[in-house]
Amino acid sequence: MKKVLIVGGVAGGASTATRLRRLNENLEIVLLEKGQHVSFANCGLPYHISGVIENRESLLVQTPEKLKKRFNIDVRINSEVISVDSSNKKVVIRNNGEEYTETFDYLVLAPGAKPLVPPIEGIHGNNIYTLRNVTDLDKIMEKLKEKSIKDAIVIGGGFIGIEAAENLQEKGVNTTIIEAAPSILVPFDSEISNLLEVELMSNGVNLLTNNKVIKFEEKNERVVISLENGNKVEGDMVILAIGVTPDTNFLKNSGINLGERGHILVNDSLETNIKDIYALGDAILVKHFVTGQDVSIALAGPANRQGRIVADNIMKKGKTYKGSFGTSVIKVFSLTGASTGLNERSIKVLGKKYEKMYLHPNDHANYYPGATPISIKLLYEKESKKVLGAQAVGVKGADKFIDVIATVLKFRGTIEDLSELDLAYAPPYSSAKSPVNMSGFIGENIEDNLVEQIFVENLKDFDKDKNIILDVREEFEVVVGQFEHSINIPLGQLRERYNELPKDKEIWAYCAVGLRGYIAYRFLTSLGYKVKNIAGGFKSKLKI
Image 1 (cartoon, helix red, strand yellow):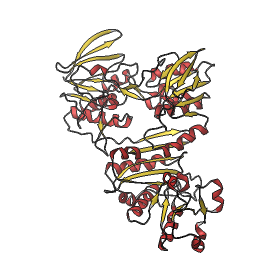
Image 2 (tube, one colour; image 1 turned 90 degrees about the vertical axis):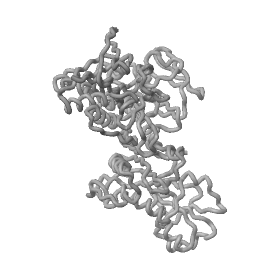
Image 3 (tube, helix red, strand yellow; image 1 turned 90 degrees about the horizontal axis):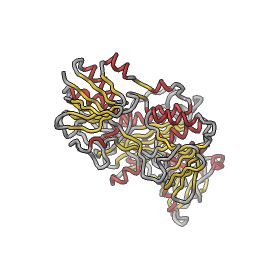
Image 4 (cartoon, helix red, strand yellow; image 1 turned 45 degrees about the vertical axis):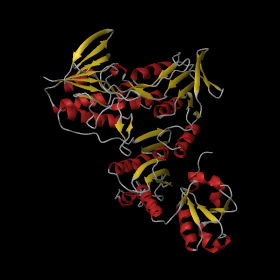
């Protein structure tokens, strides 16, 4: 009987184990998990803090007993693999201080990632926690039982940090997020993440971006954090959510190839450089589906799919993993943020020629009650017109939009494909011109030279001797604000008043979301004016 050893449970390891059993009843499957819980919903951990997920036990997806009874899998918790002898096909395991050796025919490495704990003075002090597993969660929940807990500090503005902060705030704990970068949530460009930052602050979260922590100190049972700018922040507890690093130290002398940061290197079959040893999940590098570059994408969805592929390949089915593009979604109080593919920062680094667009449609027909806006940014490659990525924020519909774009990315679709997609519509659910179709229409207009765009960040180049900024919104809309140096001629009056505009200056037209600015563009260019439309209108105004 062939023996498969699987190092690590949770998403990838547990998926591999159960898929293997469904494929073959004659394998000996041993799953080694160094923690206390073999399969748990780590994405759900922050939501137990606030009580949104009331029952802690509901976070435990599978137990060793269930996996044994249902799948005949030998699950060993508190069992840490401390070394791998790939030549002789054996591993050394430590359990409760004792070590023993186990052999294998196939080895599957799914050790995951561990919280990044940089060498900052005092970072290992009291009342400083990480949130990566159920054990971490239990420690945090125990601390929160203390009545004296009033202030919490979250270090890091990534997904776990934002979710932890939201749920602490919902629990009634005054919460501060400290982020070293200028903006939170790396997958989003700043003008999109800004919408989520405003939502955090509107709900009472204190947000400190562009702030680097240099020291932790304990003072009167509180944690005092010193920042690089000289300021200090105090709290009763701290949650470190700085990032993660692959948990692969045990592989350093194994002969298995690792990347510069410790990620396991695999081929498209998810096999390492050593035959019969596979790896998956947060600990590996994969190909980015859009760029073909090696990337680390620590998400549950890809890990589960990879587990299925590894199991299939152990059974000689010849499956390949074609890459990831990092589709992700996050709840931030009443808003949802979602993204897929490349953001603008990444595209600039690659040196690709690209075009971007902004649009702010409603999630369903305007006339049906309850419609709410979605702010969308979409990017595509100039030459091929292939979609490169997108980001969306809204109360409803952002996840739906991004899922469609992710599907288009998978099939290497273009802006024309977006305009041609036949998507479900009824007034409560979408619009007859869906946001996806509208993205395609805007892209086609750009490529057909029906509109020339200018962006909010370009307004800094305004020269009153060369430019006019034309606001075509209604007068009552101007009350909420307008771009500096604007003159207002509502679109409905433009055909009668266009002669108020000089032809020797370039006109930068805008409205609330871009559509009326585009209509003004088409009209004025037909009369010989030089015009550009401010993409996304006033709603795309950047954080200053």
